[in-house]
Image 1 (cartoon, one colour):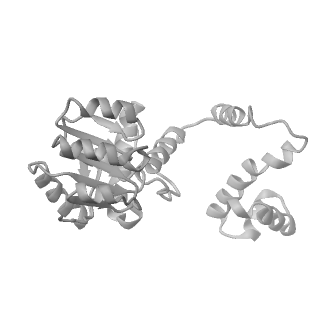
Image 2 (tube, rainbow, N blue to C red):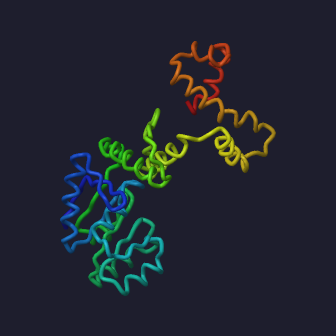
Image 3 (cartoon, one colour):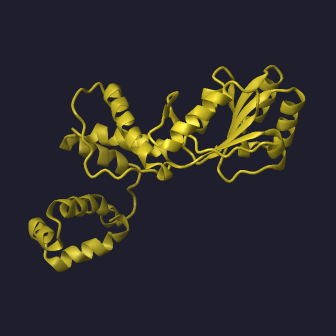
Length: 260
């Protein structure tokens, strides 16, 4: 069995982001796999592009989640190639892989980074591991610009968009990064009434205790303190501008420390 561990480029909407050298090289390897009749397992964190890469390799194959056991069994009875996502969720992986092997079905599968199964290890001759975006800062910069363009089309805006104080949210890789850019884009021209509506909708189902004012005060204080520090750079300046003495400001900072 040949095991290939690759640093694979992130795929977004059927196009690769190849800002990093490893991603560019991986694109060439993935393109080669399109011409080979081998089974491959793609592993990685959520949002790194596993499904998109699988679709790139097998563009015409049906794609099913491994947890949809009955649907997957039905599909395997009538195809010669298939994409199976989230392989770790299969309730009977041995039976699925036996059917694939016995019927000579070509399969591209995806799974989480830590996934291992002895039956899968025998079936998949090529294995891809897609690193997180935290390991590919060049690709993050490229993706941010890509998502900004996507947002401008979605919201029909021709205005120049500048992200201020932007720290990429890579907790779910491209999924969280795309969401973050979309929210920033949407909020760039928000007015006070729209902002109040957002807070109202957020709080609507959360109110109910006799200490709600205290419990939700951080929603006002945290962004105020953060914005103040970014603008005025010191507690002395910030306390003066907010009209608070320094002891009161220090207490508010300590009370909200987990958010600051």
